[in-house]
Image 1 (cartoon, helix red, strand yellow):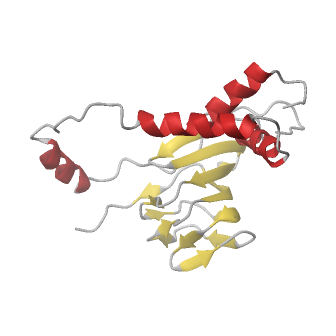
Image 2 (cartoon, rainbow, N blue to C red):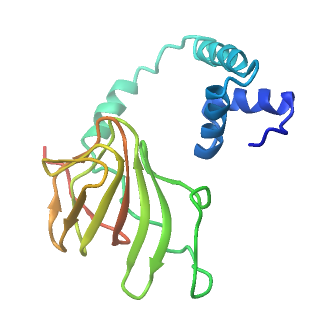
Length: 204
């Protein structure tokens, strides 16, 4: 975002910010404008945030279908459909390749969990990726088909009882099992691991 943006453009960006529809870099740009006390933008954003908050209350209340509870309980006992699998089909052009922070696509791999593929080593079946877990999300128990390494970039991540934070490193060798992997406040980490895992059934 540059100082040459028009008032209309700033209003549009403020509305998208309030809706949570901006990229990380665009959101940071809006916040920088607020910090610098850009005339009128803070008030515009406050008004948009009020509107977006009221949108959640605008929908009429509906009674859930009678079978909803039964279907929900049945789904809990089933094997989780989540698969910890990176996009191994993504090509890497040429011998040298760089990717900027605002490039690449985040793909949802489970409820509240996203991954962005950075590099695919097809010969070894190893994928380098970024993984983002929203607050309160967790991975199902899984067994590693090869060595896994990850480096926490931000947030908190508890792995097999070990609490990790920014700058902490974790390694799990082939054949090992992660019974629990979860975050309380959300986390992002760099992952270097095989393309997929063996998801284990939840104990009854």
